[in-house]
Image 1 (spheres, rainbow, N blue to C red):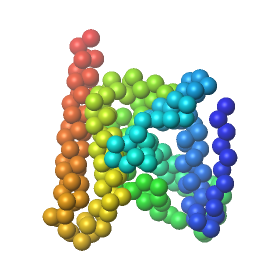
Image 2: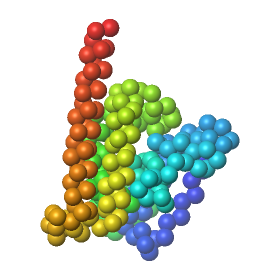
Image 3: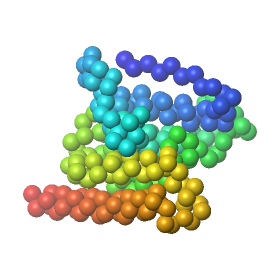
Image 4: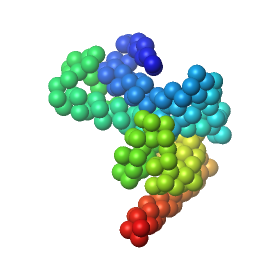
Length: 208
């Protein structure tokens, strides 16, 4: 069994504790134990508590950022639904922060991932809950998944290097901004390929 020990630093997390709790609870729900050494958490595979490295940020794992973005999106959705029903877990309505979109992962990154959820949310949820990615990869293409993950990691790296500040200054000739614009174009092309793959799969099913 996976157990969640949750202890938020309330002075630092003031107004966001419900969100943080739901985020960690989502990780627990998405943890699949394969054996004593192997397990998956969302998109990540671990062996002996180790996973592949992120080539742009060596202090992060290969699928960590992608994983965190989707977990954030799900946690924000769950929090919104609970609060709309008057359900507050750890903090009362008068002290919660309504906007938690830029906590943990940048809202820019969430905007990049949301189109994938629009196309394949059912398959993403199933993959993350079971550790079986076959249906998701069949739907969107494993190469497209890997390319999107790589682009997300690169943009997250650019954010860490200060691209958002450069964009606010409209410094379009800055090397970070140029790289960022390139990655956005690359992501557009990836989604075009994903759409073609999905359409091709639909046509193949019709012909069977």
